Length: 458
Image (cartoon, rainbow, N blue to C red; front, side):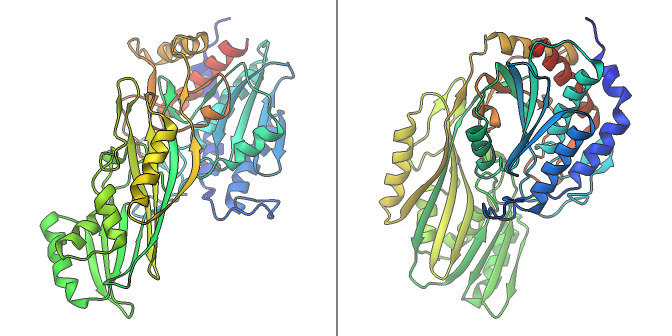
């Protein structure tokens, strides 16, 4: 059966745009996690986004399920086997410096700006409309199609852990609309490592940089007790061409410097503001256990060379180490790291090396979540179907499947890979200010997803 899915998307553009706008306008940043807050364990905004999507499903005649406000699903069909998709509705903090309101869903120059436009509310809605088109057309399918809605992807994945604990069935094939085209068959393993320690009272009173471990800090703030450092800091900023300021306050001299944010999987693409501040400390001989830890094992090193975990896999790329959050107050400090490792790295030895390194400085190391790496045979039938579908719409006939340092919900389901929506050789601003999605690409991704679902489920 020959179906023009691009034409089917075009017929629905007005409705799609209305739903996309309303979804992006919901601020779905994590507030606090409270399992006793039964109606909204991750906060009201995230639950509002989940409710919005489930209401779309009800409106359009799908079967829907709310998994105790941790997650949900929208489902088409009642066959035993199913094709699965997982999107997420939570977003990283918007941060500052946007050209348009981060929850305004403003369209300018063919782009919609807003937190979550590309990661991952926009793509989740694209997957939904792909499924809706198949339902509207009444196409004969041999498998169910299920879109699972996550709400905690950017932090601890408690949403999908809860969902699959209660609804453990696995798909015969699936994809995650939260990466890039053509598709991603390999994802690095990801750790969360928290380094804790204390300092003796010193010139450095307070330090604060970073919002999440999977983001490069774009702003650092330090409070020092020596007011005479103002001129030195201002000279440092000028000599390095940096944006920042020094302000006297009752607390002390407040120093601020801006870097450049980037995704935690590609820390070398950002400029870590915490490291910029430490370079200033080094220039004026401010030191303590906190600064020493950064200098010894982290400063300007995104590959883990100083810690001794550097490794390069020809297929999946290098080990990366993002230092994402720095906190020091009342002489106690924490540094939260986001290391990622490719094939060829022994996870247990990798973890042990972090422990050994920082413990050698008398610091405490706590391990958070560990997402083991994902690898699906790029020659499998499912991947061939997805690749063929992408090539059909993109005319990118030489495209080859990819690996990534990013982590997606593909790890939560068997027989699944990350598939779009970002097109090759286009800029991406996920986890950065001015995140946007190109509208033509967004609508094309819906056609690709619809065709792919049809091929996998017919």
